Image 1: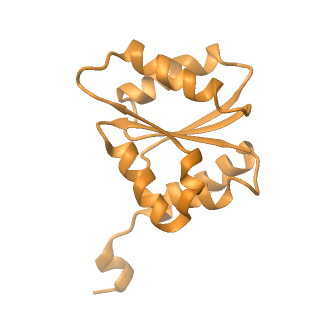
Image 2 (image 1 turned 90 degrees about the horizontal axis):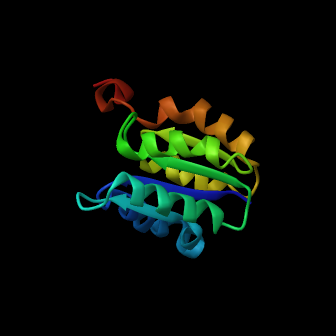
Length: 135
């Protein structure tokens, strides 16, 4: 079992979870979401992410953050070493197709397999409409 955690600036993480419920129903209840608000320090964010990992009931976690080198990304990067007993993977640049793919695949893959799969398909999750439709 893989714990999915989405960490973003503002309420975007919650929006991904709510949108995911349209496709996956209550399966999204197992997704942890954490929003970094202007009033929240990086230290508090770190405590919240660690709590989501530790309370997940599994040693395999896949964390999605919104921006490469943003505060959520940097906090996860620093805490991965501290939580060595967990297999934590992290992707920056979360989008809805990736969240849906993770939800659809998390029961049939371990975190290493899902990480490889997400890495392989990620570039195809954002496309130019004109090029795709050749208009």
